[in-house]
Length: 162
Image (cartoon, rainbow, N blue to C red; front, side, top):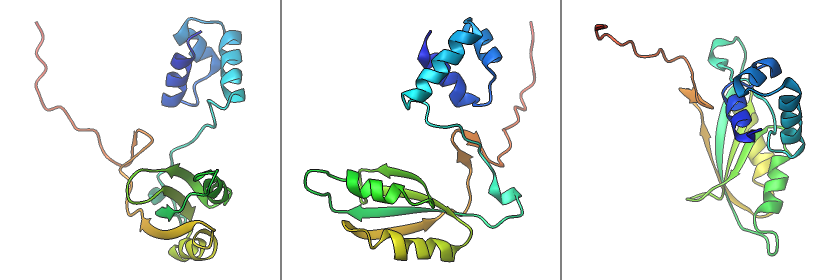
């Protein structure tokens, strides 16, 4: 079975049933189930996520992106600092970057104060962290390939058939 096809299908629809995946792939349900289990076991599939438009809910929610400049540790590089940052429950994603900051940290909170407290009390004091730059997400247009609150363009061309 082609694991890449399974991954592509699940990336587009994580809620796809084993039966539907088996039909699309032309494989048995058991083979698909075993393939997915193996991909999960090997940490190739690391989770299944729902894209939520928080602006349409009646809840306090704020997303922030924090650029973190850091000094690598001898023998460990940036990995030890990344491990410390990643363990905070506020952190939704963490990436080592090229550019002006070594890390990009995404966090979810209820208020700007919670973000400020996280940066000042937890993130900035970590050994090796040199500086931080916090950016608040004002509006999301696309998340994980999904358009958020953007209507698809209508095609006003007239249909011509032969």
